[in-house]
Image (tube, rainbow, N blue to C red; front, side, top):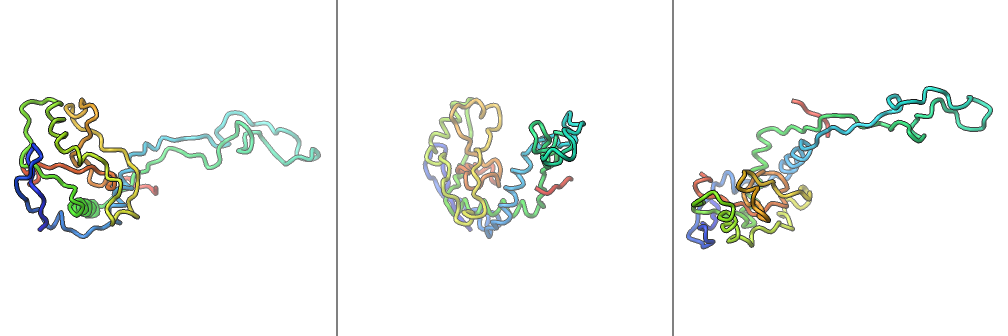
Length: 216
């Protein structure tokens, strides 16, 4: 069973903790992680883009000049795509970009990502995470102890260098306490497959550890 250091809120190592082989020592499946990341990015798309085709633009009902005798190409209206103010060829229309992923594949991706974080020694386990008051400065003080782990991982795990190499924004802070922090990056693992190569080191307390489908 993989072992990681057990740390207190002051950043000192006080022991070790064994992790489950089922979650933290599973085979890394890059295809599953790639599919989950792709589905998350696709599901974030609003799908509201829209443009007008040549049959939808206003005007252009009259033939611009006679068929023969001008020496020019044959045209009807002036709303064809090659004209100014003309319609758009294959204009995009509102659509659904949702990519569904089976539950077993999502779980497989979660296990793969957690295993890669353990192999890269990028998991911090706290004995407890308690605050005397719901103040942002108290949480910021705890996170400042683990400042060296807050930097983004520039090089992804070796298994994901080819399959998952997508620059993504950091996870959004959750909760009123977190959103008030200025310059404090969230260290909790929010989304198991969102930007695996850009994750920050997750922190976990011991008490917390125990349809419609369309072609993208």
